[in-house]
Image (cartoon, rainbow, N blue to C red; front, top):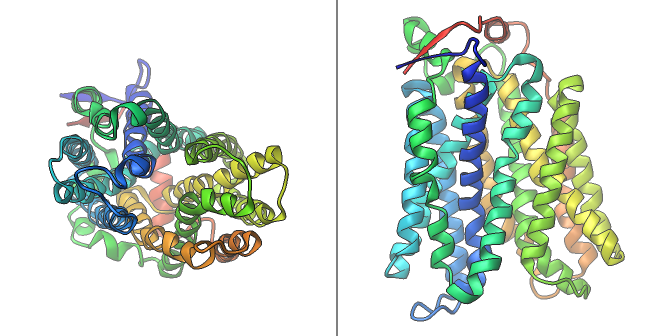
Length: 425
């Protein structure tokens, strides 16, 4: 079946971002659902999971995400975006369904690891496809909308837990995460086209002979690639550390805020609104200044949490931290997607997100040194402000674009690709 990105309607330019947003929403749901269901899992009969065991499962899932990002991010530039998109969507949705009916804790833990593989693989693939099919004039805005998917998924996971957890337990919440198997997967199979860049790359034997990972260090991009990886580690350490320990920081401060779900909702809302506003500004100024703004916002808002502000100000700071955390990561993804040429963009995204997961894995443990045991709030909040500040400083030293080489030429060729190009499945 052939799909045309030309008129009528520029089908690829409309359908691909919508499908990618829906996939990332599902991805975000699966990523956030574990934390949202922890209150019902810890002590659950007959498993009687301890907090330590629950933390181990959470870390194992993030290890799966790391492996998925590194593996799928590379394979999608070798086997094609469409195949990896469908495979990763199927993998994590199926694993989530098995999680819902897991008869033992060991099977439950194993399915979370498998789900992590699919979650990690889908994001670089979906971002790469959305970036390629978006109109160059509105690429940052479209990517910004697509990248709100994980935050909306977090809101949905929190809401489902709020409605179902207390009365029905954790199983229905996970079962809801398998809905993409009967909704999104058939739509993506029927309507998702293959990447133009992949088709061109596959027809070029000279380029195809070179490893996609090696290309990240070619044409003088090695320093920028390593810098991007370091920035991603700082971003994810801040984001995952804060989302893990923010409720405990507030309890140490004595604030009578409701449940942890409320914080997650406010944090996610801040990320959604901030990402949408930042993506519009990125079209004028480029994504790099917005990454710097996000890191600065995170550092300041987190530092101010230790000043014991009134509740209304506290909620505003949490929302700003959401933009500075998840919103900054979204803008960083935008920067990466525009920095690397289309022919190995998914590899660049996959490796940045994969290496960055080291920060995600370290974040909760890093926070434990400062938060656990009732540590001073000002110390805890400043501890999370520091990696955000470091990430911003390193980001400031990186180039906005690759130097004028073949990578830059590839980006210009991609932007000039005629809309009438036929895409073959």
